[in-house]
Amino acid sequence: MCGIVGIVSQSPVNQSIYDALMVLQHRGQDAAGIVTVDEKHCFHLRKANGLVTDVFQQVHMERLRGNAGLGHVRYPTAGSSSEFEAQPFYVNSPYGITLVHNGNLTNSEELKEKLFNVARRHINTKSDSEALLNILAYHIDQIHKHALTPEDIFAAIRATNKDIRGAYACVAMIIDHGLVAFRDPNGIRPLVFGKREEQGKTEYMFASETVALDTAGFEFVRDVQPGEAIYVTFDGELYSEICADNPKLTPCIFEYVYFSRPDSTIDGVSVYAARVHMGERLGQKIAREWKDLDIDVVIPVPETSNDIALRIATVLGVPYRQGFVKNRYVGRTFIMPGQTQRVSAVRRKLNTISSEFKGKNVLLVDDSIVRGTTSEQIVDMARTAGANKIYFASAAPEIRYPNVYGIDMPTKHELIAYGREVDEIAQLIGVDKLIFQDLASLEISIQQENPHIREFDTSVFTGQYVTGDISLDYLDNIANQRNDKVKK
Image (cartoon, rainbow, N blue to C red; front, side, top):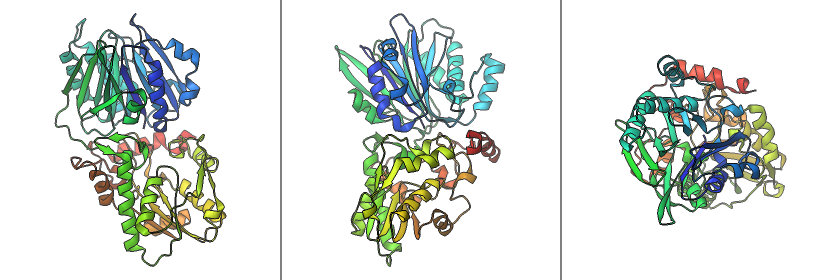
């Protein structure tokens, strides 16, 4: 899960891209990068491992000259955590093309073979994003024109869509032409665009979430549609076209559960409102199935579950309390690259307010339970703080299957719910009672905001992959490449 930004402006874009990446930092904390293009048709690139504030110092910002550019924050799933895997990537031919990508390709090895044997292009990293860029560059190169028309750009995107599979929301920049944003035919990963008027001209911005548009002062226009490409010239002319056969919106449901900020709107859904609805339905389930439980207080595991827990408390008529204090200078533990880092970070990240736990029957609420190690530590902290009984509610159903579309759930054996029933999971994390949201209730919570979304990617719950190309051999292969033992 990464965060991407692209801007075509009438003035320098370095600060706007930086500000946008700051509010997208939750989508990736491993690396960050910005590339700009100046009036002399030169790329200026800065990327490195680390947070946005660490990667970009004043000296770097001064070198990022130009009125158009791309930005990226990285969360590694494919490839490694090497700084050489950081984005944006660029190629010198044809024209000079640079690209940022959020998602994960499911046929990257096949693409690399085609690039080597057919296109005679070398891939220098393990990143599927570099392969994607080179496939796009190859198809643009086949056009054999000095000046590309919008129709040429869309033809190249259409050919790229036929070659690649998986989840991808991308923004690319072509020297002397403009910026093109495109999204996979299933719309698995989010991509929005906005505009603002400046010096009598319209400027455009693309980003993973609407919160980035807000920060940079752009007005939200709409989501990029599944299979759509939008081309903006450096002069501000905009063109769009559907470049995929049979596109169908099936967004990743985990965007609404966990990844996206509550102040964002994605595919017509307010993330905040969706989480309130999740709390409503989960609270109703608790009221139905736990009638005999004496719950003294509802406490969220900050911060994604705060709104969910508040609604649960309202439904149950039980006090809502903040029992954990979060250290905001520790990254999100779920997206840390290895188990050892995740375990050590939880204690640095959270501390208890003992008076909210001591002698009470506590209902802890979290957005989900993935590996279970974080939940186990949080429960242990609550016990240490003096809780009498601990009940646990998850706003998402049991996560039993790996994700192949850009979320770090690479192997089923690292998922606590794989092959286990609810009572077994409860015993492992040390709670007196455990309850999960029903998948149907989760889907309805989001569809309540946008009924036009008929289907989601729910593969982590069901094992059904919307691209239809995932085999057991593929799952075994990514498990061998990306499990915690390999990362360590």
